[in-house]
Length: 74
Image (cartoon, helix red, strand yellow):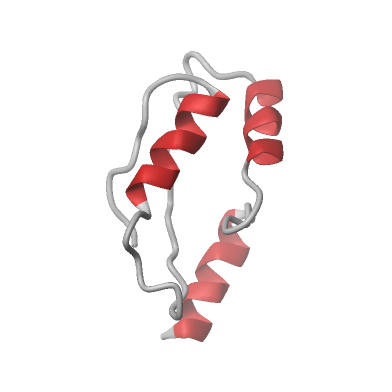
């Protein structure tokens, strides 16, 4: 899924927004989410904190890995 996904808040609020976003998904298929981070109010340590909060079913990857995985699943 690529689209506008931009929950408000910091790490925990962002994670909770992602969890609500994937409710009811078909777990037999991968779901790719490109989520936006507010660069004006987030620091690199905020992003690292979010990455630590995103355990299963999420996997945080670099942009190039994200698009390579999308191509493999197509």
